[in-house]
Figure 1 (tube, rainbow, N blue to C red):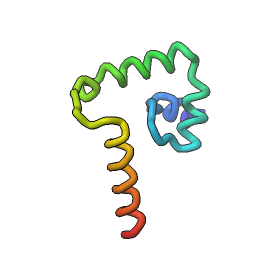
Figure 2: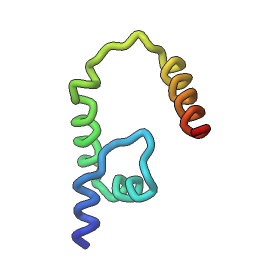
Figure 3: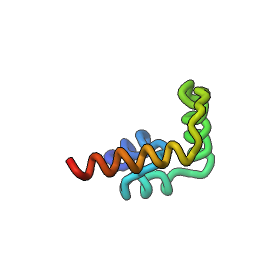
Figure 4: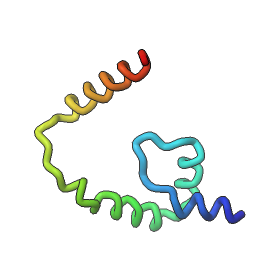
Length: 71
């Protein structure tokens, strides 16, 4: 049981959650999910302005994934 509590304490919003992360996130009450989302979005990194569009970000992510998969 304590492992589950530790997992719940550590789960944060993620763009690529593991299945375990998804289960832990879904086990959180809605208010706790909102609190954690708000905390993540209030991080100073979220205030950095970028000239990159979402397409630019996606293209770069795909390029990196392609490079990574080729070794």
